[in-house]
Length: 171
Image 1 (cartoon, helix red, strand yellow):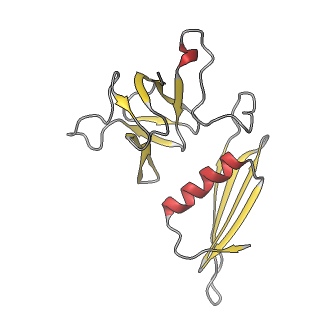
Image 2 (cartoon, rainbow, N blue to C red; image 1 turned 30 degrees about the horizontal axis):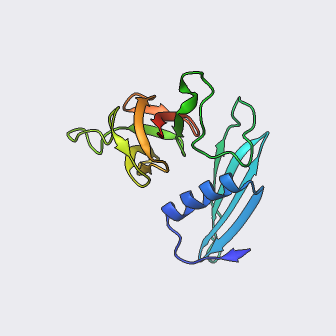
Image 3 (cartoon, rainbow, N blue to C red; image 1 turned 90 degrees about the horizontal axis):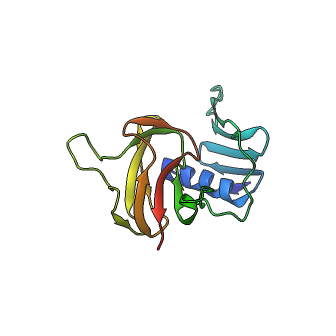
């Protein structure tokens, strides 16, 4: 078990993404008062356990978040998260997918313009959208360079883990 201090929610989300990409089956971490176990499995989906370490006689509280297994073929371990699509016309495009479950927003707030439009050129680190999960607003940044070809999700719509959000032309 590894000891880490001062973990915040963003660190935990990054850890979950890292574990999902790495192919590890289980990771356990413990901080001052927080114990995290991340387990992944191809058939049963991905489960994250977060447990508060009890303090002098208090009962432990366990929160479990389960991501159901996708109804598609398993992804090869060496495949990039922003993978190319299978369609004949769309095979040259990169698909940017949702890293979490939540509500997809194209704008930082209702009175502001959208982050990206079809035709905009993006680079790694550019904010593409926000996904709200459990009252937390997570900015989704691009990991690729290119031109936005298509927005695949409507504003204020619920999205699933690994759901395609944008098509990007890398050329």
